[in-house]
Length: 323
Ligand code: ASP
Image (cartoon, rainbow, N blue to C red; front, side):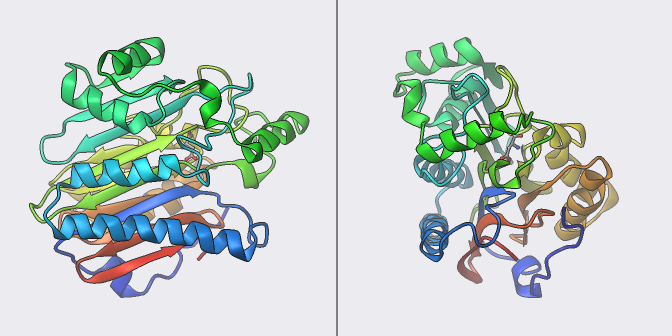
């Protein structure tokens, strides 16, 4: 685990924007050298194009909530990330997906876990938020709700890819149980997006297949409002990625918002405290992406890499994997 902050130039972290978007495709990225240069450049170009699309929409006055949902849709549809198509396998050789979305304007939120037949779990989470009296639906009830709402359905093997299958086989062989993954290359890969729009609204969304070889029924931080996802117009919008058990215990996303609200910390101070002090204190690795109510962005991680992209009214779209 890396315990120091990557040195971002001031113009990345401390530059207010009239609108901004930050996305991630998971922390604990493939070790340097394991991705071919062609794969690395393809992943970076996917990330950058999603940021560009988000920036164009935000410039045209789109709502932050729609923008984060769309960005997560595109990440879910890409086989490179552990969400939607390309999600990891659980120990039984199936896929169970989790997602959540939150609107910073009114604190409305939607979340789902144990999704097996909806190709875009973030759409089910948004539907829960908009068209149900609830915040969080799990398992068969969430699936049934998605069907009734007319959302598309797929077979569970829609999510399967050879790469994820190989990762499951090596995890089983290494007896890598979820709490002690032995190979950092198949650890994380969740996706997320946060945005600040021209109307002054913040939104956050996160979607994941969880962790390779996880126990049937295991739920991490990603669908839990306050742990993996949080948005509040008074402070910031946050989406997390990393070892979910630790992110749950540290209530990471809400913790960042609270540090800003109650301790008057800046976005950068609050995110860095949680990522470089709180999480490592229990052995938690990963990172967060965040944007505040002035359009400042922050994207710290304590792993070797984090698939990420960002841009704002004053910052061109960029993407990176390692430091
Ligand atoms: N946080 C996710 C989980 O624990 C994994 C990830 O970020 O890749 O389910």
